[in-house]
Image (cartoon, rainbow, N blue to C red; front, side, top):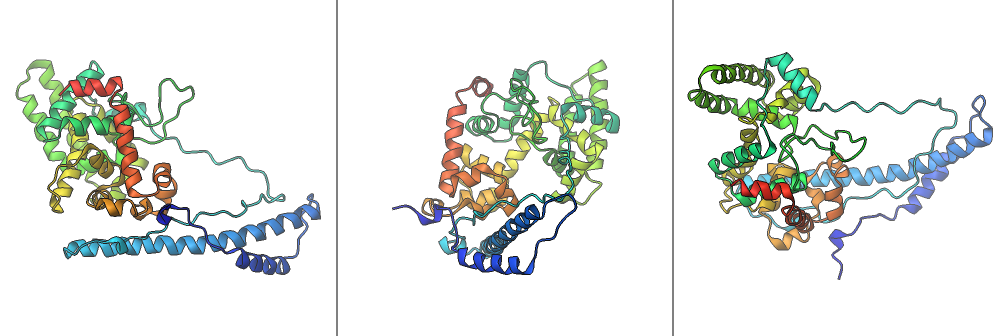
Length: 391
């Protein structure tokens, strides 16, 4: 028998739609625009009324659904704080409503406007240029990607991460062949490829992640560089000291706003300094530490919540992908609940609608299975095998 919690949710609102359409048609006689036939205006207004009626019903239903998701999430968080058990009733068990009505019609009397330009997403050249201009920071880039993989493996082992965790996350995030400077969307063999986000590296660190990591753990990165500088002499030591000074300026800039994700996000995406900070992920000394710290933070979060069992690669990726709080919710969920609880419970509406994986998988069990399947397939790729061999 099909699980109803994994079926698309639709509501029988056709009768209400018809009543609303009739009312709108009676209340809105067609108006004639200059140069546009009255018949075209009348047809547009009739179709607009149909759209507004149908979409208005959908918006009411969707608003109620996502309000319920948010309320259930707040209630679960309160229960966890009070060490109370979480059960099936603590989740919304239906899938989000899907709009199935007519599309919004085009106004024939509206002036023709070109589509709005999509803002350009900064790329590696922007990160590097602004790092040098804003902070005097020039990352030491590796001679080869394999050198970066070896540095990444050393940092991961030192932090207590396992080879399976690191290789699994790498395989999922990059398809098993990503390089330390791979940016989301910029696939070399795809003509006309464009960046789709500022995510860079083996676990696709966002620029906001880099700002947050420097703001919160910057002193630890400075200590690591200073320790390395002690063993250097001559030009290598001078170069490291310059890098340390640049990093200090970057940390200070990351701390120039309140320690909140929204503030770090604004800094990362709208300022030249924010662009420049992201160049740290390309540095062979700092990049591995930043990427490792993003993953160990998820493990520490789970332990702080009382989950002491080791996280599998798929579970760690789940937290990396959806955020620690939502990821932890899914990681600690019994299998019986995973098969029933829709993935929508762990998203905001806009985030869910932009996430094809969450929509396609439907429930938590399918989402985790999808992650595991992609990991298993991609760990056979050349890049993943090289990273595994680096441990």
